[in-house]
Length: 541
Image (tube, rainbow, N blue to C red; front, top):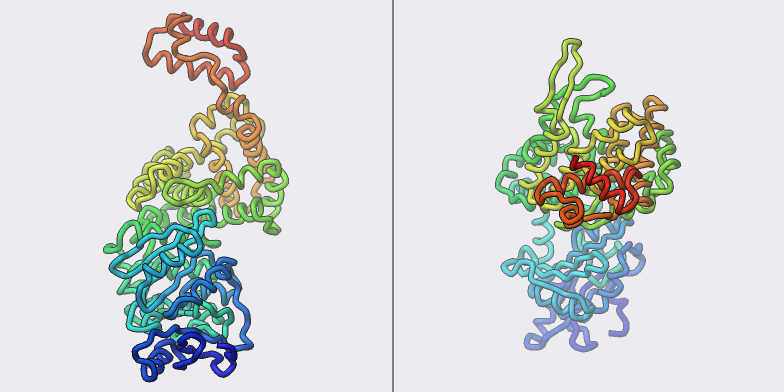
């Protein structure tokens, strides 16, 4: 087909280069072709109208367009990728729909780009192509109804009910049967129909997540529908709830999102331990109840992440000071937080989950002293157990749960350490800190900073903040620069040495002496094998 101008903005049915059918939808073009060439196979092609504004897409789309151009049936990009393109954002997860044969389409695309594919849902004719080196996924699904419009009208929110012919590149070609583009401009999340949430209650969580991610507001009707649909979450699988909660915690505004969950009743339905914190009061220097403080910690943690790792400008003097002091550790810290954790999550999510749960133990440990002061002895250990139980219920991986528990259990350590030793902890104290927390001592340091900022709504007492930041810097430098010396010293002796050379009987005593030797090494008191053996002999006296 040489001259496309007469067909701009429409679909054409082709046999070779000959146009045998034209329509404003692929179905219309196909039906027109059936009248003139009922027994011949046609190829459907979309002719894009001129003058539209180019949309923002990942480079992967450039690779996919010529492949999808060869398909005989219409293929559409749908949902979040189209929404984000209109907002000038680049989405790395692409969702396509087609009238039928979506699994086969997925495998054809996978073969063309040299990537693996698998059947995601055979009954719903859904396949997935995975590009692990790019951390991207491409999903292909059959229409949810008889045609594209029915598919779009069966989705959750209007801003997600947008489609684009897979070969098109401009906003002129966007298909928008529910008014999603208007809602994007207005910054609102609106249901497509009254049963959207009742049909799939996990969409209640998605509404909150989208609002926080896009900085949009839920319409009044949508808020009412969310509240009405909350009881249905009890029927939703733990894995689906987990996936949405994880995405909520990863948004740019997790504090706002969790607060909204509380307002709408979603917190009681999914994270009841967190919801209960709203009734737990605190004494000064705290300014807020425990739930409000928890949300403040999340908010300050996000600001701290931005200043340290994203170069975000922030006028808060406490954050500027923290960046200047922690500068030598920022690059390795960023790499550490980006580490993958079992279960498809990363270190940054682990830290944010720990921030969410760090004070959850206060609901069960509060006591009021004679002077009226409220204390929470042991809330860190109690909170670790509560956090672990809830995260296991949500089916997070064993490794992820273990790390969150370790951070929650140790989140008071930096405060105790700075009160006891100031900004210059002893090598023995540093060793004991990491012996208890492992590598999660890094997370605990960052959480301690966010906890202080939330408690005082910023700097607080300048000397206290400077001492805490100095302590955290010291802890981080020991981990990154003196690990083999002060965090995990190379063993000078082993259990067999103690049995053969010191006559220690086999049993738990060996482990105790080895731990003491390692601590002595970290403190700089034991430097050689001979000194280690002599120390062991002294322990036997």
